[in-house]
Image (cartoon, rainbow, N blue to C red; front, side):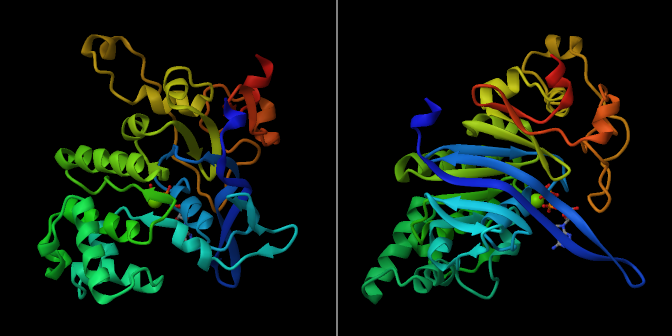
Length: 331
Ligand SMILES: Nc1ncnc2c1ncn2[C@@H]1O[C@H](COP(=O)(O)OP(=O)(O)OP(=O)(O)O)[C@@H](O)[C@H]1O
Ligand SMILES: [Mg+2]
């Protein structure tokens, strides 16, 4: 089945290091994204989960080329837009309309001095997506309605809205340019629990209506598992496992994913009591100086000598189920 589906985005060994000062005259690199390879099919939602600081936002922004990749390859719709080996670095303008970003903190991502109409209209202006002033107005009104607001809201300022409504404005702005692909960077984590599901349902409806493809970032598996077709798990810059959502949640093969899942509460309280929670020892190491070999080895309950020596390869262990772990090669 997988082979027949069209890929919208492919990334190969994508890497992003940030140069930082580590002391007087000393320079180091934050290894935020470490050689991540994955693809996203047209119309699907790929979830990305991992603890704070593991590189999720950096991955999203590097795909968009808001951050210039350190190395690797990005292919969008069959066209190579970045390749460090072949020295290809296409200008992003044609793509930045097709790929949009929805931010974690809606209030910080909306200019407080602009009205809602100006915010949504600005996106239309940049790409000249209307034929007349009246067309521009009606497009803004339609976009606001599409996200559950109304046209009267267009003269108001962002601070007059609740967090959930502000996120709807951010979504309207993203939709204004008729994108194909939306990177949703923790779009609901700053919202009240009661409105989180409303925003999720709206994103799902918009996806169906418009055939959108999503990269959906969250640090919590319980949010991502419902909305995603497939899920990738990141640890300290590396993608450690990727599989269909059901499989990843029910038969995870990487020790780190198993730990993450043991922390997600089960609906049945009796089962919850009986279940063993796997607790990781120690803190996440710094991406400035990550552990050698497998980056997870310092906290992995199954670590073997090879784990500190050699970086495990990200491989397909069963159809569509990828992971990077030396233990799996022994099984
Ligand atoms: N512009 C930057 N310069 C230097 N280091 C950075 C920069 N942006 C991110 N980092 C570092 O890169 C690492 C990954 O950060 P990133 O924001 O991508 O993580 P994240 O998974 O999105 O975390 P969160 O869940 O908290 O949003 C962190 O150690 C962070 O401090
Ligand atoms: Mg982030």
